[in-house]
Length: 238
Ligand SMILES: C[S@@+](CC[C@H](N)C(=O)[O-])C[C@H]1O[C@@H](n2cnc3c(N)ncnc32)[C@H](O)[C@@H]1O
View 1 (cartoon, rainbow, N blue to C red):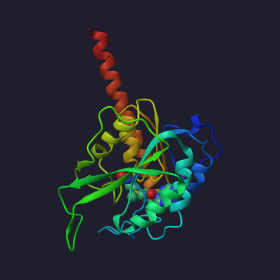
View 2: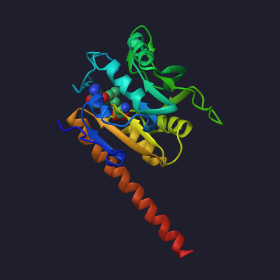
View 3: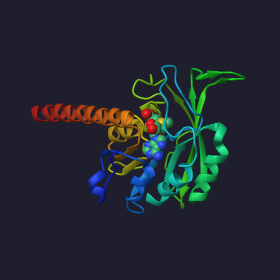
């Protein structure tokens, strides 16, 4: 496994890094990212129908140190949005508060399908809005309920749809700013960041998902380059 070796910020912006995010973030400067949007393991030992699983979903040893590093690298008076597993809310809440985050809101992602049926049909995901310091209020705050489509989970067993992430990135960051996802999976956050004109840093420890994430970002970069060249051609014809 490779990890990022030292580390001027310009070396890893617009990159997907392979490694344990605790180690990688430790090498990043304090107060260096503008927004964190992440979907850590839910601590539920998840395995999908085809047998795909998620590293660190069976233990919470990483949770406190990872949240501590996430807090350190986030700029003062900025926001983080973290998905979490509802059945392990106590562990997540303790880790966020321990790190210094203030929980300032909660977002429900409503699905029109059930991921599981038992006592109820499980039809939502959830994330906490976490502040470092006192971030400014957005001019037009988004609703705290967001409808999400099924991503298809082709690249990752718990792949989030880009459409659910874009409103959060637009609300809590500006074009050109740096978005960090320490648990990047198939790089849905990084793709949403790039497509909205932000820069990104993704960190993924699983070699297979890391490879998927890198390839996906190459495709997104290529798509944007084609779009740019078409619009340049059109403007030069005018
Ligand atoms: C819930 S998944 C994220 C899925 C992602 N939102 C997507 O759309 O593809 C969490 C990811 O974190 C990775 N992971 C777990 N522990 C990690 C660590 N300490 N450092 C970096 N990645 C880690 C897992 O391998 C997994 O891919």
